[in-house]
Amino acid sequence: MIYKIAKFMLAYETMNNEKLQKLCYYAYSWYLTLFNRRLFSKRFQAWAEGPVCPELYNKYKIYEGKLIPMVNKKLAEIIAEEDLRDFLEAVYFAHKNLTHDELKILSCSEEPWLNARRSMKENELEFTYINDKDIISWHTKKIMQEMSKENICLTFEIK
Image (tube, rainbow, N blue to C red):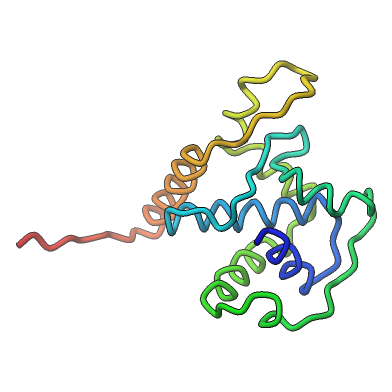
């Protein structure tokens, strides 16, 4: 599924591997947080450049720092489920104006990546996976902060 999501993002624009990694990471993170299940089975590691899915990285590493060409397919051909397309579109549009460097800075400032890196020694070649519980916790906090900024109040009726 991660390869379909990568194609989905590449249907919007050409981008380098680093930006593609971050867009897929945010799709994974937000899906996990909102729906409490993984969007795909592949996991992200805490590389120095931010969250990276090694399998996805290897698929596109031939481009090195160059731009990966756009995918010339309709979105519905890539992802059949309309709800999932809508979700992925929201993720893309929320991040599309950020450069790969800005996405790196953003993802490397967040607790899931920081917590995973904390257990590593400097210049360590082994990578650790970013913990799903950290992802859910961090993004839930972000949602709650935004709701409080907007003065959104959740009310529950007790019967």
